[in-house]
Image (cartoon, rainbow, N blue to C red):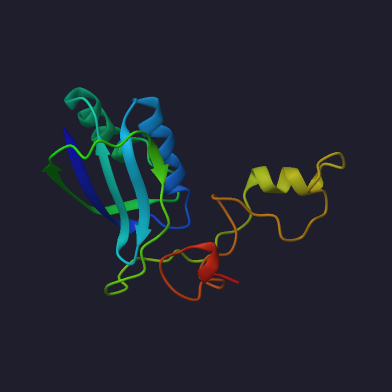
Amino acid sequence: MRLRLQIAGLVQGVGFRPFVFRLAEDLGLRGYVLNDTSGVVIEVEGAKDSLDDFLQRIVSERPGLSKIYSLQHASLEDAGFNNFEIRESEDRGEKRAFVLPDIAVCDDCINDITTPKNRRFIYPFTNCTNCGPRFTIIHSLPYDRRNSS
């Protein structure tokens, strides 16, 4: 069984694709995840019980800064995926994805920059998927390195 999910909300620049990747790997699912101009697209296939668990956990275990405004899914015929991967973003269609505001530095990053033995000690641009610039560095959607400063 295969599902195609289209997720809209605050799902770009928050570690959502790596989260989906880890979840799919944990459940033994195959397929892909990518950003597009509306949010995140996921195609995933595997056993029905695993797919049901995947859908439930996408919502209940999502990254802390993310918010899901809509999750649409459709059942499709199996595609025969061999693994699960994060694919290159698709930059087509109307740009409707949401961009988060800049987020104040988190406690983990503060710890990194104030610990003398840490390689990020006193590095002023430390940030992670839980903090740092978002809105001020994005030039275009989807939210990818190539579209940011």
